[in-house]
Amino acid sequence: MNEIAADNGKALNDKLREMRCEFNPLSRCDGSVMYSQGSTVVIAAVLGPVEVKTQSLSIDGSYLECNYRPKAGLPQVKERIRESVIQDVLELAVLGESYPRSKMSVQIQELEDRGSIDACAVNAACLAMIIGGLPMKYSFAAVQCIINEDGEYILDPDQRETLHQRASFTFAFDSLEGDLLLVQTKGSFKIAQFNDIECLCRSASANIFQFYRDNIAKYHGRKSSTASEVKEMETET
Image 1 (cartoon, one colour):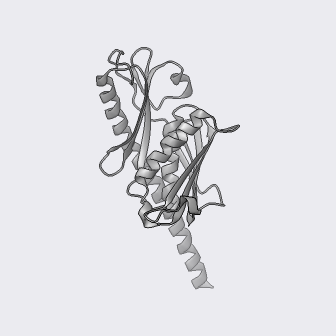
Image 2 (tube, rainbow, N blue to C red):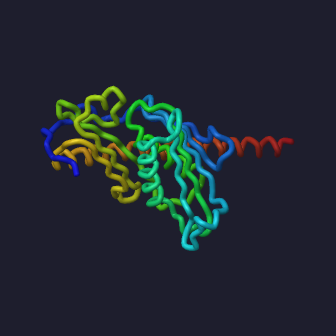
Image 3 (cartoon, rainbow, N blue to C red):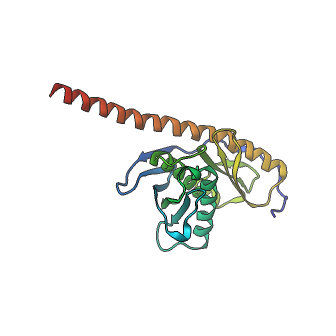
């Protein structure tokens, strides 16, 4: 349990870092995305639904597998914890009963951690699931915020800013009702600060959902345009 012992603060930075994404940079999967927030970069890929081994078989729904890999070396305790947290969010969002007796796999590879890696990994996984066509109840978005040594709130902090944090918060929200799917806290803070930061992160999540919509619309728009051009060429031939 976190100790409640920090001064009330104000938002020093209430803007997300620049978000970018590239769809399907990998070829041997059903969908993938390279996603970045600031200088933090993650690749997420999805496979499935595919045949599942007997020990993981479920007649009520599909088996969801999530693997997180660090930039270098083998996963350590912190990566296993991050992997477990991401899987919990995915299991809440995926519509597993659509494909019983099958397996869905989400693979996440960290390329660069320059702050807010937990939120970045969750958002990359969501985009990969959408592009890969996995059945979902809703999309989701994660946002990280910290309280620095001066009691100020910093949204989506970079690596330099996290070195001087008093408390850290990561929230994930669904796209339908804005319900909380994930709450992670670390450090000392007051309940009032928790409530302030939840509101700040909730507001920021709307920008992430809009980013999803804009980029997915562009992606499918380009595909539609390409298909139309091919049809015209076939007609002319």
